[in-house]
Length: 124
Image (cartoon, rainbow, N blue to C red):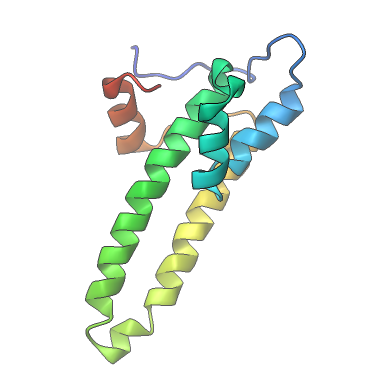
């Protein structure tokens, strides 16, 4: 039961705007390295909704980049399959945009393997 993220709207702290928190959480996904590190290295990490999405986005971004690089390297071996590689990168960007939309809606997004891994490590 402790693997289920909180439900309902994103919590806020005094002086924090829920719209700003949702926007920052959404930006964590498409530009994960920059925005997630800003959230995690500043006082914004005290906001549970922001910390949840920043950590999850950072892990997801690293995993997606590694997978995309490996698949692109394999596809680059042949010319025909090499033409498909740009579409792989476009798919990765599309997935992160969908996750960003979910975060902007105030959802506690669950990414199947990544969320479970981060919870087991105590990062979420």
